[in-house]
Amino acid sequence: MIVIPLGVSSATPTAVRHLPSVALWREGSVFLFDCGENAQMRLLQAGIKRSKVDTIFISHLDGDHIFGLFGLLSTLQLQRRDKTLHIVGPQGLKKMVDTVFKTTEVELEFDIKYKELKDGFEHEVVLEDEEYYVEARPLKHTKLCIGYRFQEKDKPGKVDAEKAETAGISEDAQFKALKNGEDVTLEDGTVVHSADIVGDPRPGQSFVYVTDTEFCENAIRLAENATILYHEATFGEPLKEKAEDTGHSSAQDAAIVAKTAKVERLVIGHFSARYSNQFLLLKEARGVFEKTWLAYELRPIFTNPAQEKDIISPRVEIIDLKDKRAQKSRKTFKPEAKRKGSFKKRRFKRKPANARYYKSDSDQSRRGRYKKPYKQRPEEDQSKSSPHRPGKPLPITPRTPFDDFDRF
Ligand SMILES: [Zn+2]
Image (cartoon, rainbow, N blue to C red; front, side):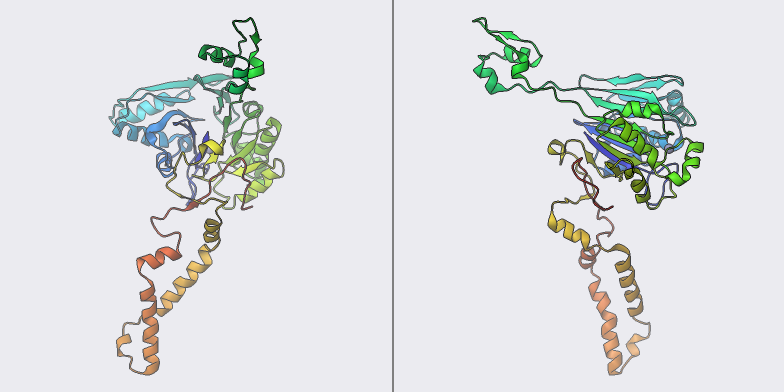
């Protein structure tokens, strides 16, 4: 599975952070957790086709978590989607969507199957497939807010073909039976035990989405032994009271949930706009639970990098941490100071309007200097010096559970 945070801001977007939404890629299907404004654009930028979205899980009906849904549905309609779309969320969700499209006089031509959860529910499996299921539990917020766990079912162990042949297994049906855990009796009466031939079942991976909640038991229940827990960390501990008043968690709360539930990896997101430096929150969480990462928009997190690498090609530049050349170019990029300096120089070297009347030698040399910046300006040169030129994607580093955070 690949987890791609699309927006990590809470309540209001900032200049650099978008409203909440997280995409989960699994075997070609995409599951969306919340759908804040801009979610559909962020999907595109992450290299994910909007038509691949199969199910959308909405945590609660606050605008910042859902206002992107109408735009996304509208796009799917224009794309002439014919696949059914599943939407899961609190009661009132269908009415909200219907009202918007009725008012705009648009009739959606593809099927939407809603699963609405009522206030007071305790636990429910909201989606089930042969290979996975999704369970939901209520969290603790100012209104009904739902946490989700996407769980892959365990896969049967691998059949050791060499061992099986030595034991005398040759037919497909016999292999199948062994794989299903059944013992096989051969013609000569020998019994071949499944346990001797088939390896241990491979545990499925899981992704847990917990946002807009105070510290609560249900978050821990959902997150038990999860591969990745995405938990909100709206505030830091110094604003604990504010967090409780507004039904949110601090970074420390998120870390306590992760530690108690023994998750493999905690990813914190949903940051209040007041934190331009979210490393404060990371530091706080890591004080309790070391295996914590900050959610970075569009930076994918792989649960199985050996299989998943290169599946999604984000429309952003990926820097491989093992590639020394790429790292070098990354180090040479000094954004603010350098750019400001060169801008200043250019301003002072601008040719004055009456420059052509300068006659003396010293004036000549000054005229030479005026020309220089203009010569340096062609497009190609500029493109080499600034990795932030328009059209050039921002560098993004893919994450695997085996990386550690490199910039703290
Ligand atoms: Zn929120």
